[in-house]
Length: 593
Image (cartoon, rainbow, N blue to C red; front, side, top):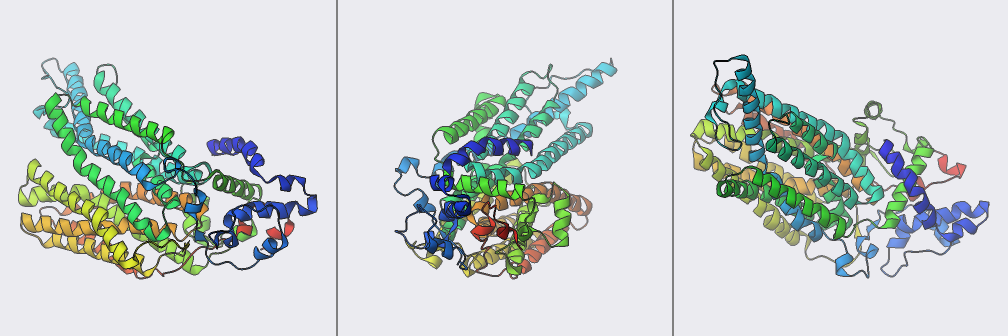
């Protein structure tokens, strides 16, 4: 909160400079009209209705003042006009972020296994060193970092490693859940790129800590890696980076194509996770040094950070950032205007806890909202969180079960994971764009209305959940390896559900709420990342050897609940927030309920 206040204070000078000169010259009884004209030029439907309508108005003319009081249709998406006339190298596009983001995910995926091996060897080293100090007759064998040390497979070391990774995951997950919504909201007011860059800084610090601990294990305790997890969590982790990347894509992608844009990001994520470990294994084998992987990852993350700072164009114009800042300052100065008060008891409980306060954006009761908006936002968030939680909670279980049921070793498991991820990438990069193109047709040059989810979105979401459910039912009944792989491929088709859900929720809210609502989704994802694996791993641990397929029955049933919820989402619902409710105002009339 203190950082946010500093940001707000620093923005005062810029905000004053960007207000129209006419608002400073008019008399006090016309000051409100000039302010309305200044803010209305970005939010008024009148300004976005025609291609040749000028973006700037020179005075608060009577026609415009009257139009502000007329009920408006959902505003059109005018992202392209924000950057009309700019050269290609200064025009935002998802393709600016996709190539470096792919390298980022490859580095992320490539360090997963080496990081776990490194932590295991470091903890094993400390355990046996401490044991040798207390037992003069005990002699420790040399433990080389990155090698297969059989003496580290003892239950005591495995238990310590399990606890250590659990603590690290909790630190990352809890801090990320606290920070991600704040970063999403700040990105609405200060731009997407500064917030994405901030998340990359956390990753950089985490990698540096790991390298330092591994380089000087006798001087630096392995517990410092927990500090690296803390820095990564305070920066929001990769969850915040993806969330704000979605907001960037929303700024420069028409609503009807956002599911495809988000699908590209998901494809980059799963492609990186699939390819990264293979490349990392090859690098370790060729160099014989596990730290080489972390140096390469550090270089890739640094390159991504510099590319963001020096090359990628910002997707939010200064004018839109200014409007969001002024809206925030106004709401803070007014406390909580009557039109924005929460009447729901549930929301009051959420607002009572600062940790859950960002979720209030998913149940708004201010002007422009209605029960359908609230229901849709809550249902989409619930379905998306359920699908994300199942995906995160089932990864370890699927690997453990395949080894137990089919006696798969590392090679067979790697082949299975690669096949599933390849199918998911094909679904996201080929199948989803093709379906969208066939159902929606070629993109029209006409203005596009941001009017909530349509029947095409809902159809894709329901089909995705069905394929996920079908895949996990198949996991439960499959008794041969090839059939198990086929079920994994079917579940991979469900990968098109998550980007479509993320795109759908951005189409329900005004443009200057995109970062805020995606930040709330980041909170839910961070929580699911901690809770879901714990629940499903406990189920598997309690039933393995008795009815080992119990966990897959539970996972399929969870998808069944999500499938039912998806049929309760209504099409063409939109939060049409009037610009009068967003602009600063000294007029007492604007405070009336």
